[in-house]
Length: 112
Image 1 (cartoon, rainbow, N blue to C red):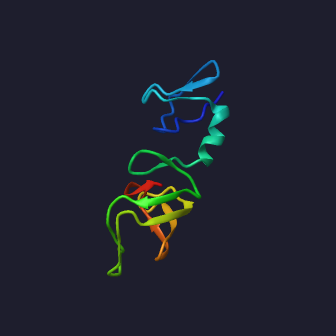
Image 2: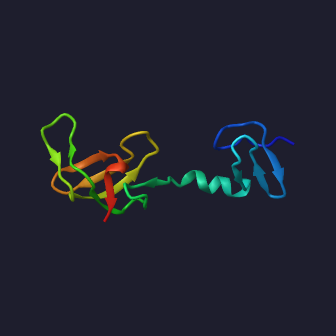
Protein backbone atom coordinates (compact mmCIF):
# COMPACT_ATOMS: atom_id res chain seq x y z
CA UNK A 1 0.00 0.00 0.00
CA UNK A 2 1.45 3.35 -1.05
CA UNK A 3 0.70 6.41 1.09
CA UNK A 4 0.89 9.98 -0.26
CA UNK A 5 3.78 12.19 0.88
CA UNK A 6 3.29 14.73 3.65
CA UNK A 7 1.61 17.93 2.31
CA UNK A 8 3.70 20.12 4.66
CA UNK A 9 7.26 18.80 4.21
CA UNK A 10 6.88 16.23 1.35
CA UNK A 11 8.37 13.48 3.51
CA UNK A 12 7.89 9.97 2.17
CA UNK A 13 7.98 8.39 5.66
CA UNK A 14 4.24 8.83 6.31
CA UNK A 15 2.43 6.20 8.36
CA UNK A 16 -1.25 5.52 9.02
CA UNK A 17 -2.97 5.52 12.43
CA UNK A 18 -6.61 4.45 11.98
CA UNK A 19 -8.05 7.06 9.53
CA UNK A 20 -5.30 9.64 10.05
CA UNK A 21 -1.98 9.89 8.25
CA UNK A 22 0.98 11.11 10.31
CA UNK A 23 4.37 12.49 9.26
CA UNK A 24 7.14 11.56 11.74
CA UNK A 25 9.45 14.34 10.49
CA UNK A 26 7.19 17.39 10.97
CA UNK A 27 4.43 15.84 13.17
CA UNK A 28 1.72 16.90 10.72
CA UNK A 29 -1.51 14.87 10.98
CA UNK A 30 -4.27 14.86 8.36
CA UNK A 31 -7.20 12.84 7.14
CA UNK A 32 -6.71 11.87 3.47
CA UNK A 33 -10.48 12.04 2.89
CA UNK A 34 -10.47 15.75 3.83
CA UNK A 35 -7.27 16.62 1.92
CA UNK A 36 -9.01 17.19 -1.43
CA UNK A 37 -11.34 19.89 -0.07
CA UNK A 38 -8.55 21.76 1.79
CA UNK A 39 -6.45 22.30 -1.35
CA UNK A 40 -9.17 24.36 -3.04
CA UNK A 41 -9.46 26.85 -0.16
CA UNK A 42 -6.76 29.51 0.10
CA UNK A 43 -5.99 30.65 3.61
CA UNK A 44 -4.82 34.24 3.25
CA UNK A 45 -4.74 36.47 6.32
CA UNK A 46 -4.74 40.25 6.68
CA UNK A 47 -2.41 42.34 8.89
CA UNK A 48 -4.44 41.40 12.01
CA UNK A 49 -4.52 37.66 11.23
CA UNK A 50 -8.17 37.61 10.07
CA UNK A 51 -8.93 35.19 7.23
CA UNK A 52 -9.87 36.92 3.98
CA UNK A 53 -12.29 35.70 1.31
CA UNK A 54 -13.26 36.87 -2.15
CA UNK A 55 -15.83 39.67 -1.93
CA UNK A 56 -14.58 40.99 1.44
CA UNK A 57 -14.26 44.73 1.94
CA UNK A 58 -10.81 45.81 3.11
CA UNK A 59 -8.95 48.99 4.03
CA UNK A 60 -5.26 49.83 3.70
CA UNK A 61 -3.36 49.38 6.99
CA UNK A 62 -0.47 51.65 5.94
CA UNK A 63 0.43 54.10 3.19
CA UNK A 64 1.38 52.19 0.04
CA UNK A 65 3.29 53.64 -2.89
CA UNK A 66 2.00 52.40 -6.24
CA UNK A 67 4.88 51.00 -8.23
CA UNK A 68 5.55 52.89 -11.46
CA UNK A 69 3.58 56.03 -10.54
CA UNK A 70 3.56 58.88 -8.06
CA UNK A 71 0.25 57.68 -6.56
CA UNK A 72 0.09 56.75 -2.85
CA UNK A 73 -2.75 54.73 -1.35
CA UNK A 74 -3.36 56.31 2.05
CA UNK A 75 -4.28 54.51 5.27
CA UNK A 76 -8.01 53.77 5.29
CA UNK A 77 -8.44 53.62 1.51
CA UNK A 78 -11.24 51.13 0.84
CA UNK A 79 -11.16 48.23 -1.59
CA UNK A 80 -13.08 45.05 -2.44
CA UNK A 81 -11.33 41.70 -3.05
CA UNK A 82 -12.19 40.31 -6.51
CA UNK A 83 -9.84 37.31 -6.58
CA UNK A 84 -7.17 35.73 -4.39
CA UNK A 85 -3.98 34.04 -5.57
CA UNK A 86 -1.46 31.77 -3.86
CA UNK A 87 1.61 33.90 -4.55
CA UNK A 88 4.52 35.16 -2.47
CA UNK A 89 3.57 38.83 -2.95
CA UNK A 90 0.43 40.56 -4.17
CA UNK A 91 -2.06 37.84 -3.25
CA UNK A 92 -5.17 40.00 -3.64
CA UNK A 93 -6.70 41.31 -6.87
CA UNK A 94 -8.79 44.26 -5.66
CA UNK A 95 -10.94 47.10 -6.92
CA UNK A 96 -9.60 50.12 -5.03
CA UNK A 97 -11.92 53.11 -4.56
CA UNK A 98 -10.84 56.05 -6.71
CA UNK A 99 -7.99 54.14 -8.37
CA UNK A 100 -9.33 51.01 -10.08
CA UNK A 101 -8.11 47.42 -10.27
CA UNK A 102 -4.87 46.67 -8.48
CA UNK A 103 -2.90 43.78 -6.94
CA UNK A 104 -2.22 44.21 -3.20
CA UNK A 105 -0.24 42.26 -0.61
CA UNK A 106 -2.49 40.88 2.14
CA UNK A 107 -0.07 41.88 4.94
CA UNK A 108 -0.81 45.57 4.27
CA UNK A 109 -4.62 45.47 4.49
CA UNK A 110 -7.24 45.03 7.21
CA UNK A 111 -10.69 43.53 6.85
CA UNK A 112 -13.31 46.30 7.09
